[in-house]
Each structure stands twice: as structure tokens, then as C-alpha cells.
Length: 145
Image 1 (cartoon, one colour):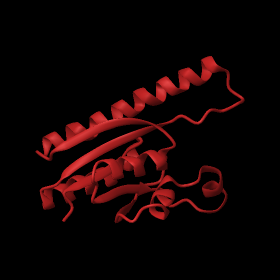
Image 2 (cartoon, rainbow, N blue to C red):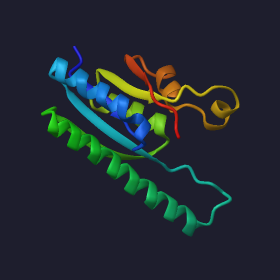
Image 3 (tube, rainbow, N blue to C red):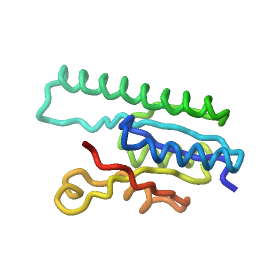
Image 4 (cartoon, helix red, strand yellow):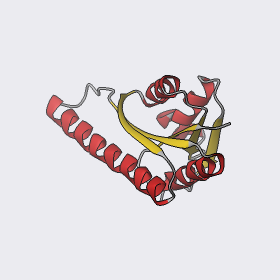
């Protein structure tokens, strides 16, 4: 059924519901959770190289913390887990990971933004849904405070 479950995480508190859903699903099916965090490596021409490297380092540290949190929660529940920090465009890296690791379902959180905020930020979840044939379980996450 759902033996390999992918849950992308950005480390935000709001994504906790999606992580819990992925762990619940793995517990129910006897599956394994794959937790990934993607360091968005798009360059911003207005930033100096030094500033960009500092931002990228901070994002990588945040991503490592995010996936280690999922690993700890999975271990507490005795759910098998694999974690990986990826670099690139988030939706592309998530989809590539899913293809490379035989993922059966992707569990993602969404803030449910619309209008101008959605236009500015886009939606990684939406891009994943539009570009995969895999089932995607979308969990509406709490609004940022």
C-alpha cells in the first residue's frame, strides 16, 4: 500500500501536523518515512556572494535541524525513517527524490494562501501536485503567528 512515505519539511512549527500525519500513516501501514528538507539554492543577484553563502549556510543548518526532528519523532514511535538534506529548487528536488526512492505517497503541509501572498511566494505543494502522478496527502497547517 504505502510502504515508502515522503514528508518534506522546512522546520517550521506549522508543518508539525503534516509530519504527524506521515508518521501516523507509516505506523498504520508498517511503512517507512523519508524526511527531506531542501535548501533553496536559487541565487539572488542583489546579494553579495558572502551574504548569499551566509544565508545558504543558515538554511542548511535549519534543514538539518528539521530532518533530525522528524528522525527523533519517528524513532520515538518506532517508525523506520530515512532523512536527507537536498539542495536545489524545492519542488524539483522533492519530485526527484520521490522518483529515485520508490516513494508511494507524499505528505505535505500547505498554508492555503491565496491572492497576492500566493503570487509572491508560489506554492511548493501546488507545484509538486501538478508534476507528479503519485498521491499527495495535503495537510492544512496552522497559520504563521
